[in-house]
Image (cartoon, rainbow, N blue to C red; front, side, top):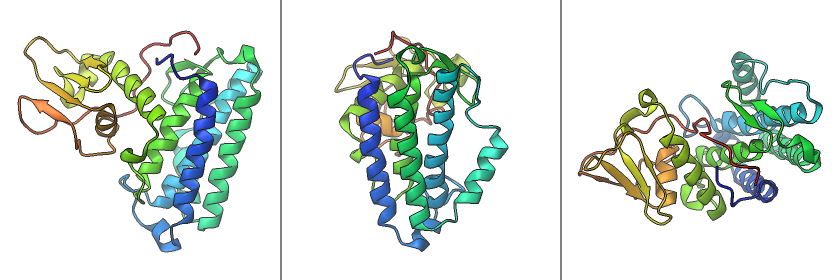
Length: 256
């Protein structure tokens, strides 16, 4: 993973990102919150509720690291979905208060976690393990990507540069490690960020197809948040469909 961004700095980024989400939600009328988000089947109220419940779920993982007692991220997928449906219809004030309070609770947990707990192994809902420190990076993806999913004026063009640098690099590294059967339409491609020079080979061989663009353009496309504007393919043709994002981390460098 990217060893340049320190997890302590990420907590500060999360605070700022949460305030941007809150500002967006605060600018929406009640009917707008019942309107469709960018995620199929979810209203904006669902997205806002998910941002809050995700903070709770990742708090659980830090508490696991703190205590040594295993706490699953979510009790079950069914419970997760039921909680989203139950919270989606709340008022704007309730949604804003929930997003802000749960984010503050997560940040406090992160800031007060004992130093020796940050390397403790925990586990994502999907089953893959990671050290506790990676939890704050997972939360970064959630806050920024789901803010864009509100479809309310904030998108990949607005993502802060530190987030783009980290998440684009992590995405390319993790995609390069995907098994052949999980590369989707990008099987056989090389993907290159033209500004950072970072790339991922997904079974690519010399002379094979390539996709390139800025790190921001690539992240928007590979995360499913844009249609690929600013991404170019060679040979010319339609952009292939990327595999589902985010990906299981491919490796963990020593804690930044």
